[in-house]
Image (cartoon, rainbow, N blue to C red):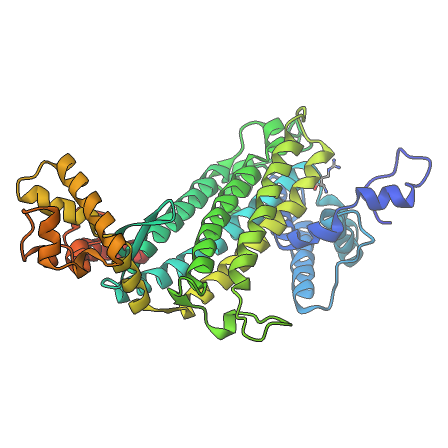
Length: 458
Ligand code: ARG
């Protein structure tokens, strides 16, 4: 047991209490941020005349060595320490002697852990954003290749109107765009530096908080020391944004699972991203998509856990807040892993274009267009709606699509039909005429894709 306190105690901490209290098994993940924050703190202390240049140099050199050794594996973080902050300080003191004991001047673990966590969240936001962007690049590539891959668009999971694969995937592109924008908002809002807030009430040392803040890439120092050490809003916001990412991936997964089913057969997941059954030799299962859908629950769980952990806490720091780490780390790991797996699966997926087009044709997705045809020939829309409804009924009775009906059969329903009806209800025409911004028509889509390309370059 190695801890930073004990002077006012007459008995050693109970071993199980120590273990219950310790966070090193998971906060060791913050070693880089902890060291970087400590280096900045030491440099600032020297600038303010609180440390000598020799002391500062020894501390910076020692901390840099610790980081290098942790990275090359010659030093490992032992669970004997209470937390990562204790480990770094104790190792530094063993390495450089008494100067190491001065590092914690004007600082508390409360502002230190808040700093570490903010820096960690910042760097993870950047990594997750990169993954989201890579996924968008995959989507836009597929969109460009499938501007005329016709498929049914659904409402209520019932075939509704024809769209294209490009259009359908564009919807996911938009979701990911909002995900990225949410992450960037969170980054901006969290980017003030808590270091120097001390335990809760600042410090009597003449710290230059603006200096450490700018060294560590923050906009500036936080302006209320109590809030600095007790704010975990950014963790909750991150978990919320990550939950939304997972919700999007889960919806996408659900579609891939449906599309990959024998009944739909719209897509074929690559063998490398499918799994078999131990008993049924014919099976090729969409496990990746199912796991992504399943893991969504645990990310939501971490959000709910953190909201609940924070809800009753009086100001300022409370140990409850140590519970922010495991869930956040797990949510981050889960999202990164799911994004990586899922985008590779999508990237290698085969689209069965004929099956999609056939499905669009068989489901009366052109019924609205048939009604619009009548409207163009002078029939009021409400009447046209009724006529096409009767036509659909007749088609169902004959097990035919609208375009399979002969002109005679069509005229039995309405005299208005003419030979040009066939072109009007062809899939190509139905999609191509939808040219409002955001619609699936090819030239409308091309404009949108050009904007996506520009956005991806920014
Ligand atoms: N391991 C602690 C945490 O994650 C560090 C801060 C400890 N501060 C304290 N006063 N016990 O929250």
